[in-house]
Each structure stands twice: as C-alpha cells, then as structure tokens.
Image 1 (tube, rainbow, N blue to C red):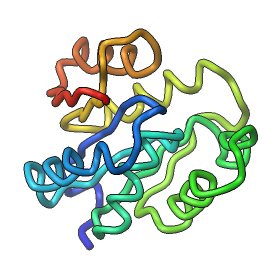
Image 2 (cartoon, rainbow, N blue to C red; image 1 turned 90 degrees about the vertical axis):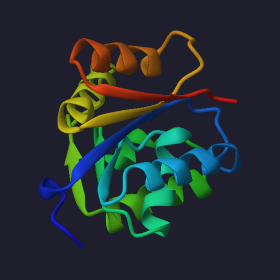
Image 3 (cartoon, rainbow, N blue to C red; image 1 turned 180 degrees about the horizontal axis):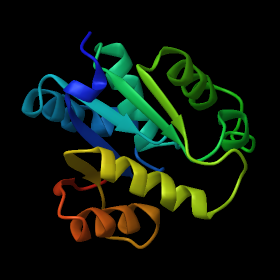
Image 4 (cartoon, rainbow, N blue to C red; image 1 turned 60 degrees about the horizontal axis):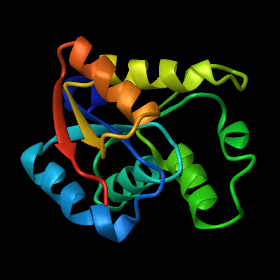
Length: 153
C-alpha cells in the first residue's frame, strides 16, 4: 500500500442519519472516480463510519481524524456496530490523528478544517441543512477545495 502522503486525498463529510446501503452507490462512484486515493474520515456516527467501513473493506488507505480520543467520541453511542466500527477504524487505519486530547465542541470544527486542509477534494453528503456538515462544506468552499456533493437521503 502506498504511503498516504504520496496519494491524492478525498475527505468526507455528511449527516449522521444516513444509512450504509443508501450511500453505498455513491461510495463506489467515489472509489471509481478517485482511484489510488486515500480517504480521510472524521470518525462520527453515520456517513463518516460508512466511508471508513467502505475504505477498510476495499483496501483503500484510510486516514482517520478524530476530534478527540475514540473512547470520548463514542461515550454516548449505543453499544453495537457503530462503536465496533470506530475501534476497528482506529486499529486498522493507515494513518491516525486526534485534534484534541479532551472533549470540546470546537474540536469538531477543528477536525473538519484539518481534514479539508489535508484533502484534495471533499465528498459532501449534504442536504443543505445547517450544522457541522454545512460548516465543513462552507470551509472547503472558502479554502478553494473541490467539493463533490451527494444529496443525503
């Protein structure tokens, strides 16, 4: 597997309510449109987890960027698949970064900015609603990054 720093990078942002089967066709398209790329995900429940799962299952180099340590991030998540996937992602990712050692709401935005700054393109699963995904897309646009948008269902 190539070193991540030598690959083009696709960062992901999207809504938590999205289901894996609903975004799978778009993830396949991204893998086809951006071959030999590393994927950067933020570890959140929903789209981030789905992109990480797809990357790991398809041997796409994964750079996992968490806002704060994994046990803190998933402390309020229900036990089960999402939590297991987060720890699988931590264990099996190609590169791992943590923005802050402790919880803070501001760390979510700092994580998004870190991912956008590191990426060549942002894949945004975005329905136009306000929130973290909107902030990430706005930051990417202001930074002059290419944004490929997919509507969340």
